Image (cartoon, rainbow over all chains, first blue to last red):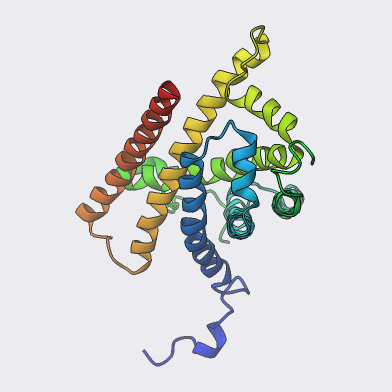
Length: 135
Length: 149
């Protein structure tokens, strides 16, 4: 059309001021979730879940622990984006909305930190065969 | 001036004026399942992970609350939570498949494909049917395994 918005102006900046960042991050973490939560789902289906020792041996495997940490990052990042939109859509009033967004960030960052810390604890614990119940 | 008098100008049409269809259902279910997973699902996952890290006793307490309390004198509380736990887990399984399939649909829509009325209706319906079928298959497998083992 010739008189449209200049590409340089919109790249990274839309009317919201932060362009397509939210949209893109939502898609990227969605891709991560497909792989990583898919891995968790298959693992949960195959594990004897009531057996603490067996689940612990699985989770303390370095590759599994790494995948679980990546999953926590991807999932909590993705849910933070999703719940942000929920709050922006349904919570009215500037103060309540701000409070809800603050609480959401506490939940997303705190939850991710809790999850990663638990995985690290499991992965770096002494070999389970040597110390049953020794955590 | 504009905005001062109650005008007869048409207002933006809202949800109520549209005939309800599968594309609308799948849209709101994407949000419902996503928020359910974000709050209940992530919460359950962290609870499980924390119990796993805390040791065999904490893990046994988690299993006794959410899944099955093997104690002969099982408390009324655990009788309730053993059922509630399975209901929540079945709900989360459905939310997982609904959000996954619906999310895959969104990836297709992102390419600009699938907006034709019939195609859109077909895939919206398939997402919802697929999620219910996958949930049923998952839990038939789980209960079958539980009965055998």
